[in-house]
Length: 235
Image (cartoon, rainbow, N blue to C red; front, side):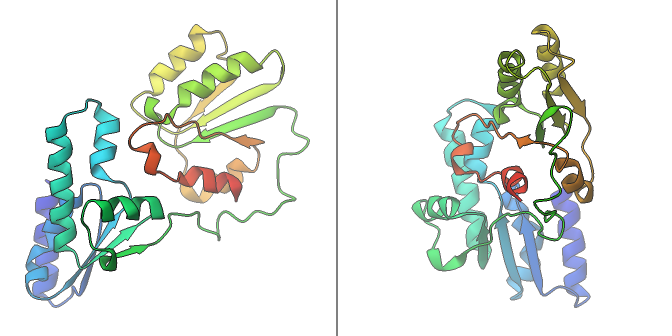
């Protein structure tokens, strides 16, 4: 549905003389088809691959179907052939595309890093002196990103760190399961869930925490990830 609407809008903009370059952000890669008419008339397409579709879909939906993996690799190759320029977010992802036959000269790396204007709070603005020891995770709440691993770790640490809190900020398919897990192992008072916050509020929220935790499960997708939340914690 979105592809059809994007195709209509981009074609209209092209016919009005208002489209020179299209920046297509995956997923999915095949959104490049929404600007195929301008492409036929010489307009430029940039395909911004933030996540590799074959690996991400394999990790998200499970299974090891070689047919589906091959189908996603074909979709990726077709989309990359339509685009004149491809952006990757790290060198590992770039090397993966090259292994699958994407020409090196078409690829540039633009790392997915925090906005320094927002995440630049200074060393003197940290949570020192807070009455609690606060862990934090912010982002999508799904099992493949390991939030439940941290919840179970907190259960093992509360005897050693009595004032330990784990703040979980975000939404996702497994949020209710994480809440149930905290109740099941009797640490619901130590786990604090809150909804997603606007990006311009994240830095001020994080400065009240002590440790940011990224506990991604090792799978075919996370092998190629450089989590932005980790870089935000560093900043």
